[in-house]
Amino acid sequence: MVKEKKSVKIRVPRINLWMISTIALLAILIVVLARGKLTGQAIASTGKITSTLSADEAGKKAIDLTQTPELPRRQEASKFDAPDREKANVKFFVMSFCPFGNQAESGLEPVYRLLKDKVEWEPHYVIYSNYGGYPNYCLDEEEKYCSMHGIQELNQDIRELCVWKYYDHDTWWDFVIRVNKECNSRNADECWEPIAKEVGID
Image (cartoon, rainbow, N blue to C red; front, side):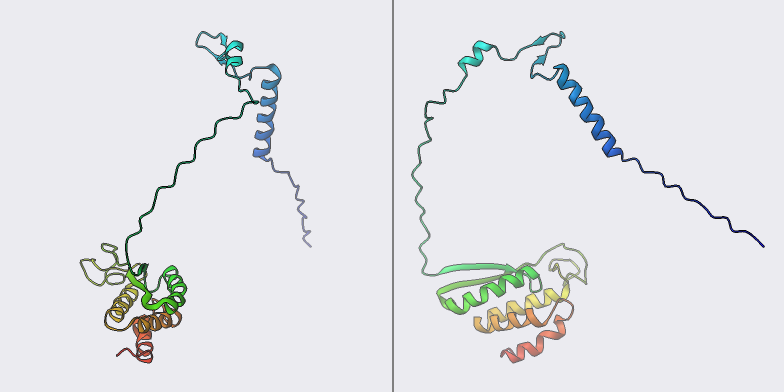
């Protein structure tokens, strides 16, 4: 019969180097302060301690707290001359599947529904050149027309630009908001067509 040996584990406490170094630095700081070496005086290259400010100079530079300091005078606001326009112009820069662009469109859509033609609306699609990654991110081998979220996003950007140009703006908003909710940058090339038909785009 073989006897099993029981192993005994002795737990050795770990040394916390950060705590030890902090305590050592604190001790050094206390010694330096106690010996008076940290008094704010400069030590010249000769080794002598020289004062940077004499008592007479300090008295002359003292601030009289009983006097009220002179406040800077308020300058008259410059007049703003807004350009003469009948309509405000709202430019918004988006990518069809950028989450931040989709949030902007969702926030602007009710404002558009309220103001409609009282405002000039201008969607701008962010399309990169030299982004790299043809054919996954760019339309052409020269990489002039690329999109951050992939080629399907670039295709959708072009579709949305065409809807903006050739249809009324209500149709564009209907199309864009539905695509934002129902499609993504991986399925846009298949997802957009039924939505387009439902909102009246042929």
